[in-house]
Length: 552
Image 1 (cartoon, one colour):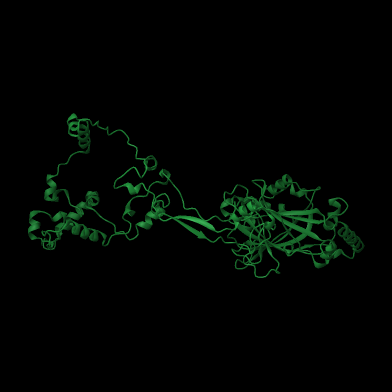
Image 2 (cartoon, helix red, strand yellow):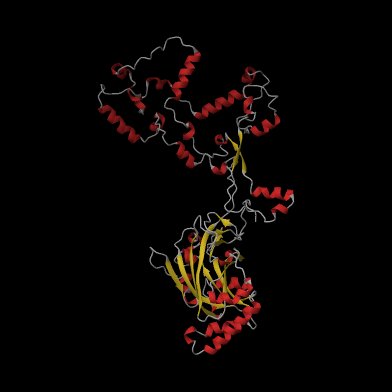
């Protein structure tokens, strides 16, 4: 409660209003006076108040004073608690059905087997029971401050209210005068002699004059203090500045394998205007800004059964892992410069790449009657090439998909019904729609969230013929950069008529029938005969500082 200057308590008039500067002068004079030195023993040298005193380094003091030498009531502060450390054994979770160990483990040296046991043995965790009392592990930040202050009653003191504006004090004075003296409660503004005569006395304190043992009184006071006491009285203390923290440490998590944002790519179909020979495809992620390939290749086969028969002599036994048509890519550093590069290959045959690609660029299935003899000749040549060189491949065509166009509406890839999976089609060359995408490319990296975007089905038709014996990485990075800005470089590339239908979506948390990059069966895997989905190994654009918990 507050009081005006004219209605202070009676004892308040006797207070000596000493200025703070005079108090400091008096303290300095007393500390520096020779009389005070004599009182303290004569040999005492006064410490100047202006000298900065460094706090005691507790760790250095403990290390230099052995606990067995120092004796006293504070000795327990220097001794290590006997029950602080606790060893816990946690089962190491294996995400695959098979343990991640080499196949020739039994024939390895015993010391090598012991070294490999780090990938299969359970975790031995050292737990400290009292570390939650340390500010090193539980920082007193603003969020924890709000958590502590929940349930605390706001305290209002006379000193805080006395700092209110004078106009508010005048309003309070007028309200107080309007209240009759009989209804006036006891308070700082009603402490005059006249008010005390008309106020009711407080209730008497029982047994206040009785003799009580000191131990009993301490026990009663302890119980009284604990009644209605908040669990965290230090919650009102303001949090320290994080930049000025003396020591900062966090509780370490159980080591686990690193995994970035994951997307799933499903290859649905691949069609050409003419069907002559088997065509094989591969997918990989590239970061144009970093000029790095950030994933290994995922190979898929969408050929018909008739085309697969041409390679039957070279593939007497087919491993089920080679039948995968879905891949899961991990992206640790999302960026608007990431492209999904699709490369097509064909069986190696005699002749230049341009001659091998020419029929796919000029002939159509609708003109089969017109080019019937030529098509039969091409199929015969392809059959002969498959029988002799079916194990070898040669580059055929390539294209790329800008992933930013998938996670956002940038780039002219239109969305259909928002309630269903959208099907996006890209026809013609990239230059036809790149201008619109270039104008809206300023969205930046904040939209590159590959973990939460709407699934989309794409039909890609803009394939480019492979120029030269191979497509170098430097040439590929130039072409990918040209896809993002207006340029005439891609116009010089000859298109190959094809239709690749793929589905791109965020990867589920626990996909079924999934193989790890080491071709191990990831849990859950209900049926080993089902066509699997492959996890593609990531090559992060920058270093990822995490321990390896699985053998690769």
